[in-house]
Image (tube, rainbow, N blue to C red):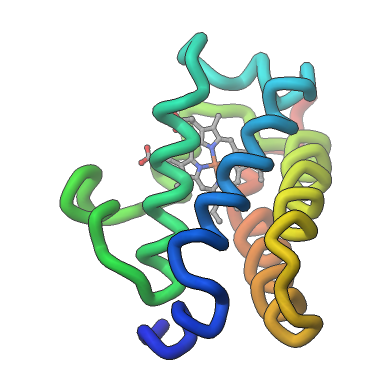
Length: 126
Ligand code: HEM
């Protein structure tokens, strides 16, 4: 992604809002919350925030801190089944709503999240 797109989407502010609202939802969703190994969701929120900033064309701080994203591999320790995916997308829908993007940008970002969430599913077990 390029810097033009990053700017058009609202820059860091947009992804800070998305990560923040997403993790507020996670903390209230038992299905998601119990999957997180750390009691404090703050560090996970920061990882998601930096990843999204980098993915959408902003600074590549995520890479500096965490290395190559390899998201499927990083999710391998967690049971990402269709139910978890459904809860993840529900929380993310509210997060993207909070960012108040234009209709076209909302569709672009949402399409990405739907495809990425589908790709993250790694089991069909309960
Ligand atoms: C489909 C349902 C998904 C579930 C249930 C899920 C769950 C999790 C869990 C439990 C973690 C570990 C928390 C942490 O310590 O960081 C995590 C990490 C992460 N997830 Fe997901 N995730 C899902 C989909 C996605 C998608 C679609 C993306 C990206 C668009 C994503 C991005 C990330 C990132 C960036 C991290 C931190 C990776 C790192 O260690 O640097 N996740 N996820």
